[in-house]
Image (cartoon, rainbow, N blue to C red):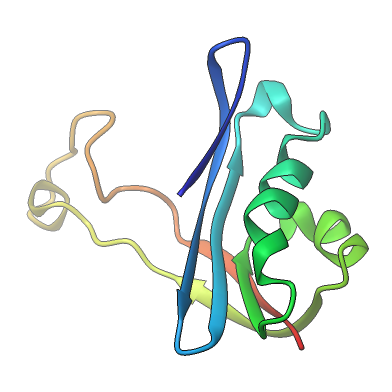
Length: 114
């Protein structure tokens, strides 16, 4: 995991995994107040620099498409990410705000650079 910060405040994070000669980069996230300020680019470049010679996949949302393409990634397929519903939602009751598992379905793109 890589965490970006500015003046002691967390501005974003990502997860990078290497296994079997392949790298995977997941969940590049920046806080809204820091969008378009270079945080996403830093979260892409710093953890991936040591993996320059490996085949690499990137799982990300469409929000960063321009950034990913500027770094040489191309879309190879798309996927849907699903979240589960809480027991209270399944029973027809409304869950309290902030209850885990109630986020909207997130659609992302899988991108690969060879």
